[in-house]
Image (cartoon, rainbow, N blue to C red; front, side, top):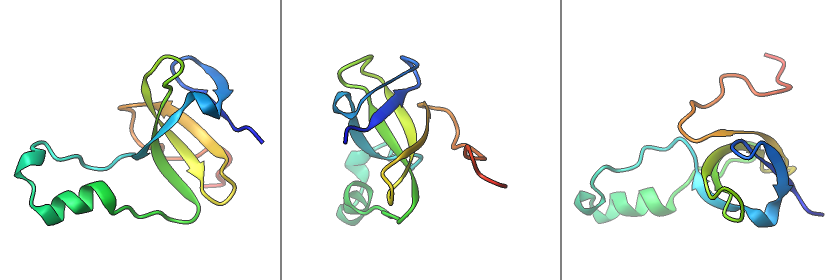
Length: 99
C-alpha cells in the first residue's frame, strides 16, 4: 500500500516515492562539526531515541518542491499525523489529541 504524504509547501498529498526521510526533527545540530569529539560526533550522527509511537522527523520532497519539512508520524501504524514547515516549532497539540 502506498502512503500519501502531505507537503506543507506544495499543499497537496503526494505518493511516498516523492519523499526522503532526513532523520529526527528538532535536535540541536552542532555549529562547528569539525570541533566535535569522536564520541560527540558518533552520538549526533548515529544515536537516536527511536521510540515506539509518535515521532518527529525531517522529510524532503525531493521529486517536488525539493524543500525540507517536519512530520509527525506514528511508528506503530506508519501513518502521518501531520506535517508542517521547517523552522516552525514542534506542535503543542496534535490533531485528534484529547488534551
